[in-house]
Length: 91
Image: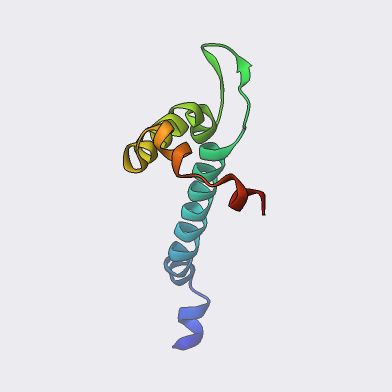
């Protein structure tokens, strides 16, 4: 009975489903990560044909938001410079 099951095509179809699904899931996740971070510079013909990673293409906007939110918590730029001690920074 077991030999009939192991040599059955239907058995191997059912056994292969999780492996094929896992492989396809791994490939799609890998492609998504690659397209998120690479390439750093735009590749192609602007503005219609080509690609740049999502994170690198939005780096300026993300940096601006980060600085604005950080400065909001710390205070104005002049207040930050007033709190700095040049002697401690030189050490």
